[in-house]
Amino acid sequence: KQEVTQIPAALSVPEGENLVLNCSFTDSAIYNLQWFRQDPGKGLTSLLLIQSSQREQTSGRLNASLDKSSGRSTLYIAASQPGDSATYLCAVPPLYNTDKLIFGTGTRLQVFP
Amino acid sequence: DAGVIQSPRHEVTEMGQEVTLRCKPISGHDYLFWYRQTMMRGLELLIYFNNNVPIDDSGMPEDRFSAKMPNASFSTLKIQPSEPRDSAVYFCASRPSHPDTQYFGPGTRLTVL
Image 1: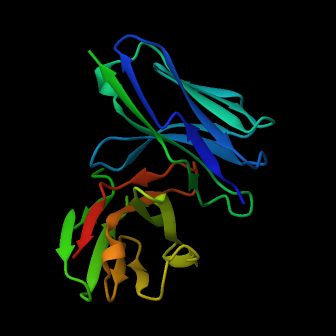
Image 2: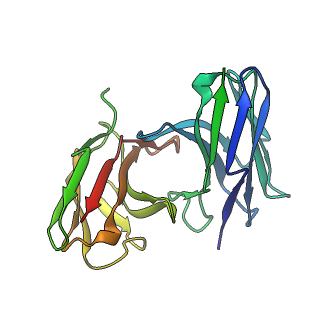
């Protein structure tokens, strides 16, 4: 059974720092991996989707990498800003049903001025 | 596009009452998902539909929960009778056939007293 873990659970950094959020999954046979952002009291917003054949994806100050063999993905945020404060979740679909998503527990990020 | 619309945004009810949550997916999306989010269990998939047909309801916790999608633009999640442990935020999400990115609604915060 696929399990998705995110470390750290919470992170507080000063504005301007580059930071890395980690996502681990137990079954390396994945179809893709997705990163989402959730603001307090809001729904999830998709940030990046990495297909299993890709090693990384970039969007603005965000870069997500994927290492299937080690069961890990990282989300790199460059030059963090207070507006980046949110909870970040990664999710993978199980191979037996690629329509579903199994979510990690999330990393709560706070960027202070 | 208005995005995924959910109603109500907040619901407070007493144990034993029937609760109906509503969702309007993004027009043209073939898939609709219902999730539940709690502090203890994180984000869990309850059920999903493809072209209005329920595909996987293995996440529905009990027979007290039921979901319908009578047409492509409307879905309901019903809890009857409700219990305090059903208190959570319930999200609806939709996506097209391709790509796999899911679009989430703002959620319904349910409190059962």
